[in-house]
Image (cartoon, rainbow, N blue to C red):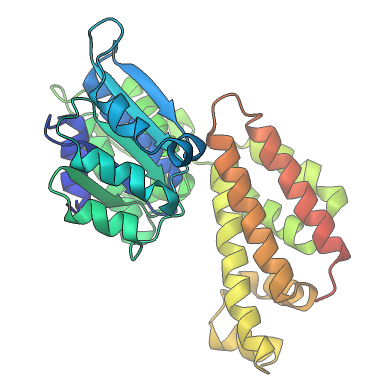
Length: 340
């Protein structure tokens, strides 16, 4: 079954015993992880988690159904979590959905899966599965998400607070949830004692994550100003900035460059491309320099590297912010060598 945003949030907060598979697919891996964590919390603090990867599913497709039907070592709640799910998991998923019984839910996260792919279509068609497409929220969707998450914590966001939170967290649900939790704690808010959260409260917890610093850091990366990267990243950190919003904004800028560069490769000039796409005046100079410096292949490779770094940061035990700093420096060095 295909779930809407409202349906999936209700489903993970109150799991249905008949649902065998929760498939979270699409590029917003942080959003998928947040939904998976909510489901895990709903199953209870004593729930036993079993982790499987693609290697295990390819080598033993029947193992997934076996794990889903197995009793916990201590007789309690159990669930199976799959990460990095690919189309190659199709046989294992089919066996799970066709099994005579499966008492333990399976949470599958597949950021690379396509909605048009066989695995997602199979999950949508199965009455014992829920499939939800996770995309990084932007614009009105990001603002609406901030309002929804805040309401769940007993907060009524007023004025421009929803927009500020959405912008500051770069569409990252996990960071948004943490900022809202801080705001709820500061205002002593809860679902049974709702509070209004205004701009003054947001200022008090320092939830603005340095938009100006993000802009300058990204410009330094794309311009290849290697000597300035350390200082820009330090200023971003001092302003309360986080690596995930930085990586996501960098990826968006690179994707915009890819689109503009595509027009240039068809014969348009830099000025024509900037005018056609109505690039914001504050970004015109930097965008023009980047278009003259980067070619399409270099931009594509940079996008892949940024996304790989974000995924690496999601893994427990990773080097965290250090990975983002190192990758920004590496891309800046590549930009310094690039000539378009």
